[in-house]
Image 1 (tube, rainbow, N blue to C red):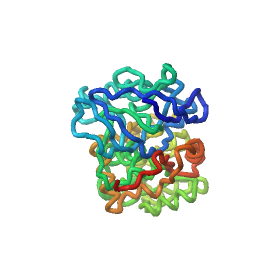
Image 2 (image 1 turned 90 degrees about the horizontal axis):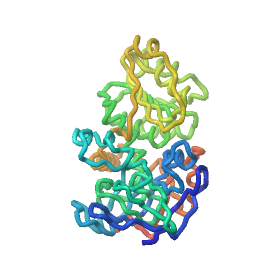
Image 3 (image 1 turned 120 degrees about the vertical axis):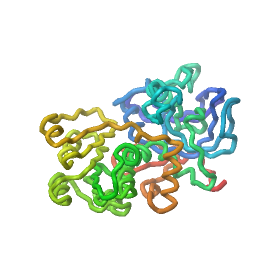
Length: 373
């Protein structure tokens, strides 16, 4: 089957939309998805420019939402016509999956970041030549084939143009708080960087009952939005020392938790310094940078911790519907971070993400889709 897809030919190249891409047939546990929309994530940009690589040429995208067209012979609980959000693939068989932590699947990298399908086949080809895929999904396409384990079924009244980013950015930020840090009501949290992931973490902190939810950024418009979405306090770190200000806001102690979404060494260090005794920093950015700190002075003497979190330790089939329910209750307003772009304008949309002009660009792939159809 020939499809249209946005291809990155070589490291650092722009996206080029091609209409001659051969798509893998539907296997026994696969579903074929008609793409409605896809978010653009900073991980897509990291691979496009070569900070990470799946091999080139590559078709990116891993925040897809669409409608199932076909299902394989062994697919359970999904059928043609179902609306789905797509997330990462985990085999469900290894010890980590069986413990309920699919983000730690023993074969996570093989299945999601090897550039081939979970079964080792090429997901895409052009003129018989391999094209790498991403997350066993590649949502920058008009149609894709993915596994049933990648899919989260959502109600048909859910606007598919809005929910693709729940499959990565939003569950990464919110899951880091809900599933990993697990703050108790009355505790405090500061989030460094108010992009989609940071705002999701911040909203999760608010929902969890944190009495101080502090947003740190250098862009006034983002800090304004953070306030609208539930931040109790905002700090422009271009204008004042965030560590000093956070301690002022917490009786000199610092916060119980910090989340760094920037991946910048100086900011990651500030996220440590802003912690109270016994506090924990979650470092969750995809970054080529390293963090330097003193184990004794920064961690041991204050009993602080730094942890890495992959995909918010999420179980997408649980976490995505939970976020949709929170949204319907007015507690997780992800749509306020989104801006729509036509699929053909993917390079403009990606640049808007890179520059920070747009928090969460969403590519509209099926322009005829109407919510509720």
